[in-house]
Image (cartoon, rainbow, N blue to C red; front, side, top):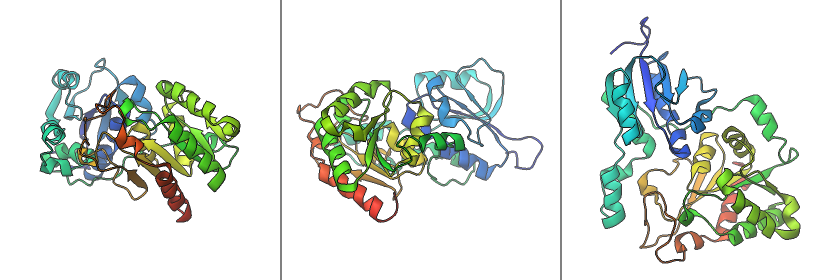
Length: 334
């Protein structure tokens, strides 16, 4: 192994194409590489839409979205383990290639047979760090991090006229992960009436219809709701989340972004479970979930609930979410 301080710096390529939340969780790998080998050159390969996650990250030398570049690496680390990443893994020149253990069998065994496995006790970040341990690095599962600029934060500070607000990310890729419109409307009304804050709804273009419906149902109180879903970028969303008093999110990308910018997060877990390793390990993130025999029913969520009631999500009460919001505000964490 080359030693830090030598004229030849170690060159790393990290591959993770999707999704947004999983891409955010790559950033602790960057930090751990630099702790073990300061000055290393670290490139990241991802989809074009997720390039903003790594912008302004001082540990990233370049972000690439294809193979139209000529560079040879000391270590190529596949943090996706998909057909596409495996193809790139063997096309791109590297002295050593490593792949993280995604614990697919262990997760499926737990999903279908509720069979426990030691891999289930490890977070995704811990599994992402395993390849580094194989090359002799000492690792620590540090939180993910998105680096925001002063200008981005100044813009976010103007979203609600400089006043504090609660950010709400109601969307999720899968329907079974979503709370109802009625629950969000009830929550927003309580936030307005009980703690005197406005709400800012965020999400991508796919969440725009849901957000519009929530806004419509707030009726006369909609003047206290700012709907930015589908209207701002990933980085703008990250800044809005960081500037919020609290973020309320499903088990989806905004939850991970909230963790990565140090926000206080209330995360609603339904069809998925903490044992799969996607939960943020941080006192500033509170997970609300209900113990049910049918949980988990899928690895990432699904379009339909087999019982047609999405009870795992709907049994999470509005007052429970409000209690956590109040706790964060009361103890000065928000």
